[in-house]
Image (tube, rainbow, N blue to C red):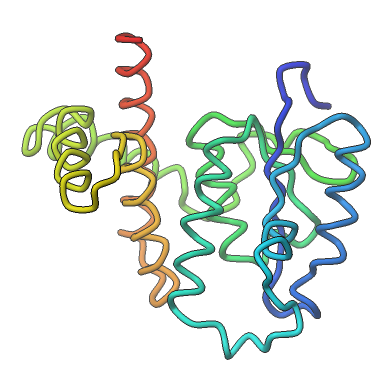
Length: 216
């Protein structure tokens, strides 16, 4: 069951390949969780609020559409205290990525509707343990030696992006956007390297968060 520290939940599950992108199931789950007192970050509700037509054929979704969804939903995972998964989430690439990201950020994952905690040892991505180990090694050794600590490397990137766009970017946002790039590439061609890099950028983002808290 959920602990008392969980206030905000991100809701994920299968969408594509299901009528109306499975919006009815998302909305029902969102309403039930809100009745229990949780703030719910629901991609389906957000889609509706943004004017998305659930009757739109999947083959009419553009690359720009998918990238926008990815950026938005990854940010919601990061902002949440935990993730709730709808039945059948295992068949959804997007939901699997979001669950993987939540786990790497040490956010609990619950199975809706019973809200039973998904055990950490349950392997949802096949060789995910090896992927995480490889990402840990890369972000602790090779790449850190090449580029310096993540908070310093990403601070330089954030400064350049801020100067280019006239908008202030944070080091954590740099990490989130890098994850989005990998998610977009993985949508075109699923490769192990993409999963490794997503895990690595997640760790870098958390390192940036820790460094920020030290100085706040």
